[in-house]
Image (cartoon, rainbow over all chains, first blue to last red; front, side, top):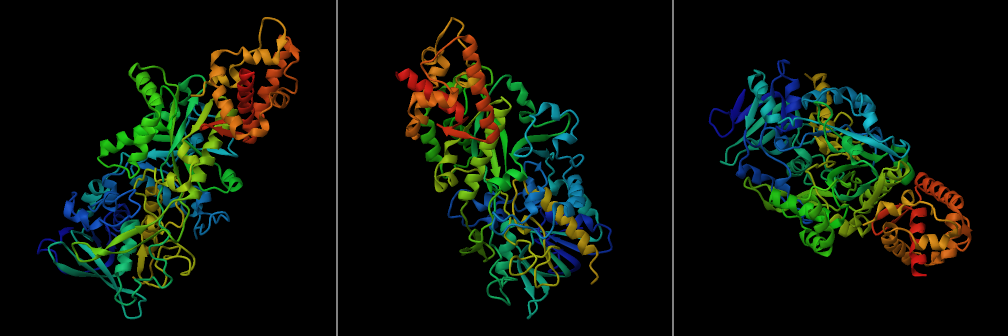
Length: 522
Length: 118
């Protein structure tokens, strides 16, 4: 059933077995699991079926670093940010779940192996083929890739979703289901608990026309994303001034993203066609990306984070910072968003006009490809100082906006630089070319961190842990200390890996749905 | 820009009779000579390696002035190729002007730079 809270037909008081806050990928994945289940489910979505500027403005917040704007890196409409995502899917590596003594605050209370059944189901949700993320699982692909020394460098693989727009793709079955109520334009403003703050009693909702209401359920799932979920908990101060389940001051901390630095490039030896498998982003009819990354053994040996290096574009002259900067500026013009470091990039271009002109001339003359640029993406170290808090400024509903304070630093820069050196060692060993590192990788942490690209992968702010002293939710994604509140989404990730978060957050959401179905309280 | 020919794979033994290692290095084709800039940058950061004789001994296990025939050059080159392969295996790389090259390659380019100056 589809209701719109802007219309009088939608009641101001609703009741169900399960209330899901947030109609993005996680919320939709859970709601679908309950179709025709005998459960009554309410799925609350702050936006509508299409983007709306006033609703989107509720996402506006403060990010003093200025490297990305909060309201342009996530989306309020049915389907959430899948309305704009690129569809890159990959599971986290086994090591991403492990406690690593060189990565403070690492370690999940579950393993990759334990999550595998749900990874396979998440694959279907993203309209992907078989769960195959090893080169060897694709007949014929191994012969087209480099024979890497797997003790130090391994292949990374993504499968490319169409990309699935969850709002468009799954709206029909959700609205057709008699036991599911999809309520649009209903923004959750507070999670209310009883006086002892041991269980949620209701969720308060509002819309931009001033209408307010409440939803009561036996179980609740907050699925609002890596910034809005902690914000909603911090806004829920009816019993505890510090916010809901925030007795240990952990809600909003450990924010993580995936820095995407221009990492440099390769000048290839021999036929550039040998790199087709890394360039074409398809294998047969299926979209895949093949890239490189440090093996688990190399991560342990070098004490670095996880990361990946993928081929960017072809080069006719060779890798230079100037061309990387020109590419970044061109992307900024295309998307109408200037990076905070635009002046640096303009300086890079002007400082090496010779390289830029040679590359441009050779492209114009369609001279042969001599190399490729590389784009890295790296895990961010979980750091409690990187956090979401509440700002002084309020949104149109009168709620304090989100404020993000964070800074990627040495661990991330070192990881990318070391990964590039591993790539260089392997390309040299195999006689496939020489690597040039983008010189920003070799500079100081602050300057490097000002020159990164971001893709809206907000993670870690309600992290999963075995104890309430070290995290916000337990291994079942239930909020520590609350009997009936769960969290779905990338905010529960204790570490971020290098892989795009969607497949993992979907796997966790499907696992949570199964857990809820088995809940003995119903 | 680093010409790949500057790396060892692009070097070849002289085919016009006996000459010294130093004279061979001085007469290398334009690619490696252009790459001597990389060698100069490497030397700038490693003042302890600024001796051509020291570099020659490290790279070729021989003296710069020693006369060599074609077979002798080929043996030296294969020795350097083996050193370079070991560098990549052992991740003994140096970054010069952004380029991640094997230590042996960097030293060879440094030696080319020093011989060019001579």
